[in-house]
Length: 395
Image (cartoon, rainbow, N blue to C red):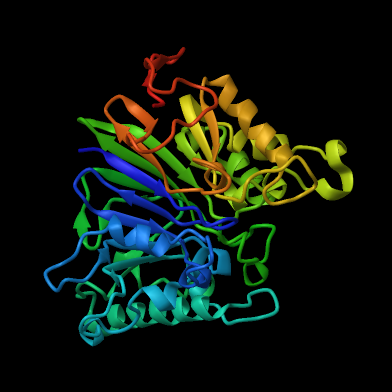
């Protein structure tokens, strides 16, 4: 077996499933649009595609071992309440087709009250309530909870709000080594954000949802190699956050930002790389070199993926053609590739883009029925070997 990472075609939004070598699953963000219910609409049915990739438990429920919501924006949680069971596991309706969530991974932003800077859509409010329910269950039970009640809180909150959650709290820079209460030998994930420490230049109560995005760097094992694939995600974190990551890690821990696979933050937005407006300044817009350095720690043959609509050469943002060019330059330097989910296998009919991680590294997974994906690298060809000596196949 191998670890497979599936990127679902959700336009400008994120929905990513990690299926580890041992079969455990981690779903990162959700965007399932109601348009799929219209038989005359050609919106990809990503809910159906997700269920095809999930196992059923002894109660015949589709399930994910962990659901991570990077931040509570609609394009990262749409369809959650309709397609997933939220609430007491004992209240799961018989013959329901909802997906059972064994464990939630959540930023402590769910403990904040809604405000002008922290508005929540219906699905985000539902997730907020579910995360709170699970934390209360943990507190009431003295830490002993089962499937459907588990949660890991990613990052400390202000004013000591998470101080009593020690066994379910992961602090920034620490490693996640468990899934659903059990040690996981095929994965560890370093928590890089949200950055939320006293003394930061940004007041914690006024952090936007984007600035509070969860950022994780996964180390995924395969064939006896603990770091066969390094996968970096950062939700919608903007330029200021990536500058802070670089400035705090560049001296001693820039290797924590290394990746073989990266999901571009904020759907290939220019504001991940610059403070300037692309639509206003065009080619005169300036790149933040610190933010770019944080996002340029690609290993040999790395693949960078934009979960977005097709990218046009215009003033749109996101996705932004200038950001695409910056990421293409990064991958070109390491013999890698840039791919857009909304363009594959075609812009007219995008499908699920799957990346496979084996002991040979990271490659695009292609079935006989899937057209070859053009671009850099080798398609159905020989392994690519670069200066680091690491071998990559892109077939």
